[in-house]
Length: 195
Ligand code: SF4
Ligand code: SF4
Image (cartoon, rainbow, N blue to C red; front, side, top):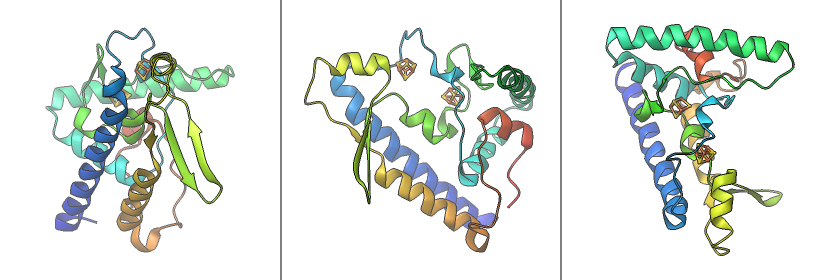
């Protein structure tokens, strides 16, 4: 997919990302929850991402950066992939800083992936088996303890729209390509997805 269809797809994904940010704020703001000053930096989490649409959009953000910044991120990404592999070979869950984190600031903030936008606040998923509830991070849950009636984010429709965007991107290749299970660093090292 190229040209106008790709731009339309990116607009659709950007609109979904705005919905995610709003859904996050709707839960976090009443609690007074934010990541500011948190000692647990979640940008070292071994987050894995699963859509080629987000992967492609990440490279849209990367392409818009100055060449020297892009090279810094690609170099760091190769180092992060190596460090994660070493941790995995020791049987550990990798705790490796995301390659686009600049001293606590996200260098691809507008293009950061879904889990970076949703992680931390408690949420529900509604499926055929009913409603499943998931807690937020420790800091968020400690704030929630003082607000027993506080809301939860419903991720259901957000996931559905992301799946629909992925289907629109892949079209006839939907279900016929290998599953995506990559960290952001692995995506950067691999280059844009081949579709
Ligand atoms: S999501 Fe929670 S644990 Fe992670 S950085 Fe934010 S406040 Fe800290
Ligand atoms: S993309 Fe940004 S928000 Fe997500 S882990 Fe990396 S630095 Fe953190």
